[in-house]
Image 1: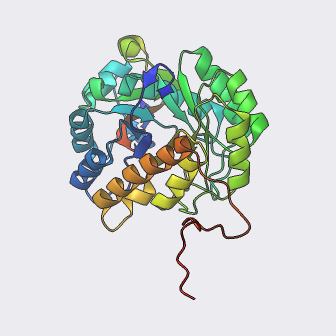
Image 2 (image 1 turned 180 degrees about the vertical axis):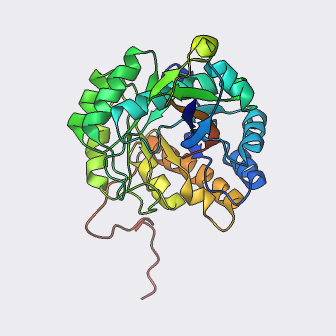
Length: 65
Length: 253
């Protein structure tokens, strides 16, 4: 299945957001996620299905003004 | 001074972007004596982990921003992500109307502010000096307004000072923070002298030759400007008026 993670096309076998983060070695406690433009709270990662063409954004704290 | 339910002592809110190094950023934060630092959310880059460490060490209140958002939807999603990531219901709401001027889109700003307030956020809206936009933001639930001094990062200072004075007079009891455009400490002091409650700035410190020393300069200027406002500045006169008494003046003729 192909998805977009932070703008990059990616082939994955992950079925849920939780599995995707594990597959990508991303610590879910230090990021926030959105799928197809909507915020996905951390407590529903395990039940959030990743589907073909999903656009997923995983964001971290960054410097800002 | 209260920003929502939070009592603050320092009236300087400091941005964290564009410093020469994480160490200088950290020292500038300490030197500024700020209690509130602005942060953002981005796709993780190389320096992600070290910035997280810095945030944990500085022990400040975070004000995440929605910088770079151009629509209500983008701003709302970013705010929701920020709330989880930074564990705060504070959000510096920016909805940008033009990529070159970085001026706020007031229509989208008011709509986003309403949605976020209803969702439990405490919104700090980056707005213009327009009074009606300010009214609408208050109606939407904002308890703080943050008019720009000048375009973000421009360092032009208070570009429309008379309108800012009017805004201060019009919103007597609303905390007003000048956000963006401040270039030098004298400009920050001026904003405080006319009664603003705080200054949010970033580039002026980050891009100084010595950001740590500049953080100290802004710290002191903002305190001085606020003292001057409280002390009551004398009215201007058209003519000179001798400050030294005439009585007892010697006659040397």
